[in-house]
Length: 455
Ligand code: NOJ
Image 1 (cartoon, rainbow, N blue to C red):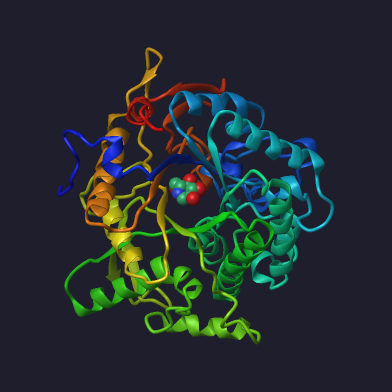
Image 2: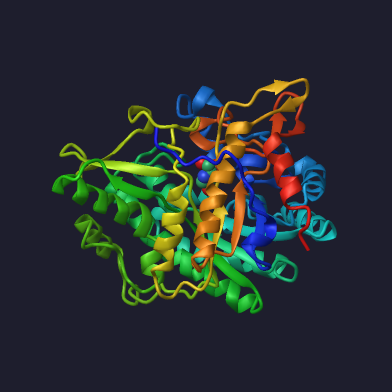
């Protein structure tokens, strides 16, 4: 197996430079629980997890990490681990239960408490507006396939900006739009479970428009805010040197890595490589060539693995398929994702090659492995090796003068991993979900030491 895992990690905090930001990332549905407490309305994930056989062991986020009740304990733990930046998302249906009507004061109150407590603990809140949990009432009107989502989203972002913008200065509009449109509106494996191109294409277009719209609303209401949005991305390697596999890899790359960033930069959809995307024009109205543009202050890139892609005439529209890591005799995580540290470097390089990106931050990177509690401790050496190997690659990019200014580990505590349920644990902190007890894993202890001299 050809992988570059470090036997030793001798980088220090200062090697990444004074302005490099270190933090951890989480998301509302994956951690908060309290799914119908204090006036919260249902989201598409509350509904989707109720459908039998869609999620590993029919698990759900109804309680999750109980962050709703334990946020002080978790933020204090974060502080004790020298983590100074906390990325979390707001639950739209906790703030506006039906998505567009009455506001839930207890929802506002909850996030005010979280934000205030972060600030009290000297932790900067980085807020994601949308991390996949659309209010169910909006999905019942078509969700992301309905163009009216532009109005719903504008109203929601305005509320968040007005309520929290005096204290929250770091914002991200969307989390991984390729994943929530692809898995949720094409493959049907994530909420809301829709399939087919007729759902995917309008969802993509409306997400692209909301990505920029959210940015504009934030800038208007919080002129001194730092506005970003985040993208999933993976290095794509052709399975062989055959022309067909190379072409297949190019198509997969356009879909997985370019579909959402390029419209924001004014480059349009990557229709040359994936001609079926031309059909998105069916959902255009006049002015839609300009509306995707927004000058983000930073772009969040989220990288875990690489993909190996092969030509396949059975896959519609792109004639390309991903060869699973488990079939390639490579080191994998519990998600069956290849451990491939240089992918993060390649992705930093790739995003650097676009002109018009001001700043790049790694807003997610991490790994799920089997964690075992032994005598009250969790020695997660594989996760530690993974994190250090990826950080070495981030550092390599930095040394070469590439633009990369921060790193957020996914994730703080173990949590609900969507369709995979609670089986894959990504946390720096272990959770015993039966008791909600937290145990800092070896990887978390290492981070605590690594970050100790942060100013
Ligand atoms: C991407 C998503 O943003 C996050 O919600 C998910 O848990 C991690 N990656 C790991 O799959």
